[in-house]
Length: 299
Image (cartoon, rainbow, N blue to C red; front, side, top):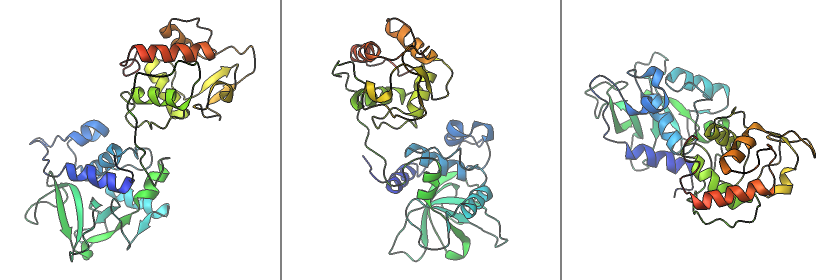
């Protein structure tokens, strides 16, 4: 497992080298992340895809299909640099010297080379073809004159609300939880690993917060706002796996309960009062131990 976001982005991008879009300009990267701009140049889309597969979704930060927007965002948000590039940084190119951002790649430094090495989506394997719309994924060496600058990957990742330093190793679902009626970190981690089949970007960190509840709501088909509302117990009363912040709405004893919790309780076959307590936690643990496919698809 990779532990560094920069190394992981480069690893993902390197694995794509040699890919060629279809003759009608269809490509798998747009198909997965930006289907509305399929058949268009995909260098920025490919870069976004590599970052996404490394564990971070930057689509909510900047419109990656349009390279000038990437540079503009970086300049406005302190992520732009003209030297000191690191592996994984996005490198912006200008082919004609007209001051326009034409193309983007992923920096992969080669200290022994004179040129600047990058992994680029939608380019050509040599200078003979189109550099911005060649259709393939290739490793290229470029001169400094063609480079406008670099976008700091860690700042882009941080803007997406993810940790800029590390991508945590994710434990696989074990199907062997201790059935103690507590929502501890192992129970949450098990649930997150399953929900990741529905929300691929979901972190498996053993801490149930906004994104975890939102993923569970999507799984159960209830309103997905990431908030467990109207609860009778504080998060800390139920276990150390729940993030005690605004995503857990404590109303005190006699609270009316949450629609998401009701849906979950119905699925688990217990009284559906909408209030998460020890019985709900225990039923969840028993159900996940019994069925390792549970919560891996929408119910």
